[in-house]
Image (tube, rainbow, N blue to C red; front, side, top):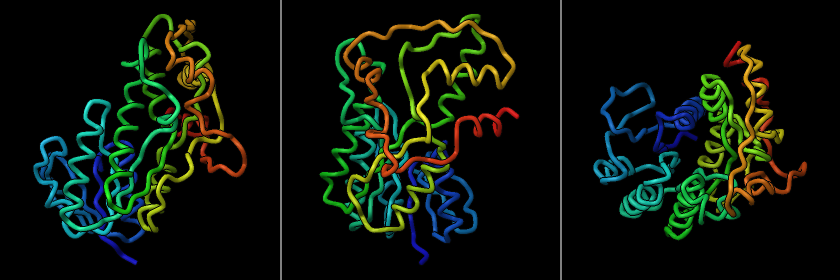
Length: 264
């Protein structure tokens, strides 16, 4: 059944993939964007700003669901509150929110409060969504492969590659997260759904080494000990899909496949 769905952050890494999957599924899609763009078949761009509220009421008017991908560690809560307020005025659209695995486990205090501020921002936004009075669904996902591609490119420019000592990650393909969000948006509100991560857990050093091999670079890796309570929880696996058992949903596409596709 065709439905009208709004995507915030629809031009970002995740949002553009969500838009593609929605269009493939036959949905009429609106994208909230800061700049005016020409409409495409089945796709309308509405200029607006979630920080100021400009254009948001127009964007949410008449939609059946909202996939909320916009956000950053400074304005995540404020932007989510603006969206929720507008959605309440427009009716009761199904609000689907993307969060990050570990928001309920990683404390953002002391030495790590700046490094891990993203987790706190997502947690605050989660609470706004769950208390909104709207029908809602929240999916927590691990970090995307795209992030570690950026990290790899950055460290490849340095004579020595710094890596967080004993940090492990379970990165996931952003396209698989997008597909899951679309399935959730086209379904019934489900509250907090099971976490989604990639098919394998890697040490930070493994991710960096594999990127360097893929681009034929040699660098000495320098392990850095990250202090603080937040880092201690990450070293203990607080950022991973837990427990990692067959019953928990995990992506299929691997980091190695992603690297081949991106680096040749």
